[in-house]
Amino acid sequence: MSITIGFTGIAVLFVLLALRVPVAIALIGVSFGGVAWMLGLTPAIGIISNTPFSFISNWTLSAVPMFLLMGFISYHAGLTAGLFEAAKAVLRRVPGALAISSIFACSGFAAVCGSSLATAAAMGRIAIPEMVKSGYSPSFASGAIAAGGTIGALIPPSILMIVYGVFAETSITKVFVGGITIGLVTAVSYSIIVLLTCWLRPDIAPPRPLDADGLNTRKALLNIWPILLLMFIVFGGLFSGLFTATEAGAVGALGSLLIGIGTKRMNWQIFKTSMIETLQTSSSLFIIGVGAAMFTRFLGLTGLSSYISNWVSGAELSYIQLMISVVVIYLILGMFMEPFGAMMVTLPVLLPIFRAEGIDLIWFGVLLVKLLEIGMITPPVGMNVFVIRNVASQYATVSQIFKGVVPFLAADIVVVFIVIAFPSLILFLPRLM
Image 1 (cartoon, rainbow, N blue to C red):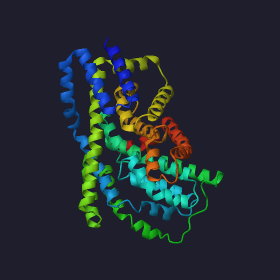
Image 2: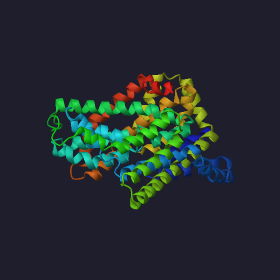
Image 3: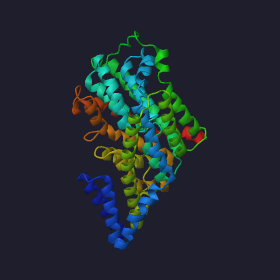
Image 4: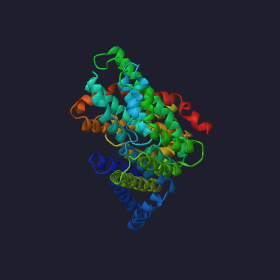
């Protein structure tokens, strides 16, 4: 009977999500209703009363608002403004220099942001007009930035990785280290796509190098010293073991504030805007997390998680069969759900399976974030695409941007299967720690 209630709860959850009920409300509603159905109203009220505090009081989650604050201050204070110019100066002799520079500028922005939406929005405003002016197809230029934005959640500090580490009860620092590898591999794969496009379709991606006039490499690199200093403080301390991921968030937020004040780029309005955006984003993430924690308890009470784990073990799926199933699930969910919601809906079911199968949860966390970010550029609800449409509406329509991301989606799929075939690619650095 309890197993039936668990399956019914999952079915109702997906019906609510299909009806566009907010993810948090759907998770909380199904969990409350399911527990009330099984155990009565009093236990259900107990869960809805206790879970928010028990989840949000987790000390590790304090890193989320801190890293968000660091990113918002860095962006609004203009600490990241010179990244694109610096990448252009370094890569100016490479075919497709503007597109590749945009991708690596996204990687640099990601190191102080943790959000693919913010990365796509920031780089889209700067890079797309310049790329179109230089002869790039508006569709390809917009697609490159939409895809490049996904690196924002791969390279630490990644908000998705922090929340995953809390739910999976695994080392956030080691997930971060694995994220560096997949972030850089993704950037290289996107750059290869640009180079191939320049070679095969010079009409949409001009292969000529940038004009060196006006590009001063030394000056461009000096202009990004504030962000390099911030990255050195946060990542140097984090990966040397000087402080934990949670402490790194606080150090990063304070560092961005002090650097902004020291460079005279900080004012009260920027601080106020950064604080408001941090509070808004944190509250929306935490309420979904509370819903996911309640849903995990509900499934635990039904025994469904154990049932599914035992079924998978009994089915004797091979490693490749299991991973292909997971990839298909997340690619489908990514077409209709935003990453955080998709992760929170699926982790209560999948984590017990991976524990039972003995799959490394650090490796899976990195792969999971990669799969979730692919959903940010897949139709019909690729959120990065709509962000690019908003910041560069005069250059490309939504359908043109989706067309532009197709070759980058192909690169993403190749990266995913490389990671599945060679787990040590992700685990090499974490194992050195």
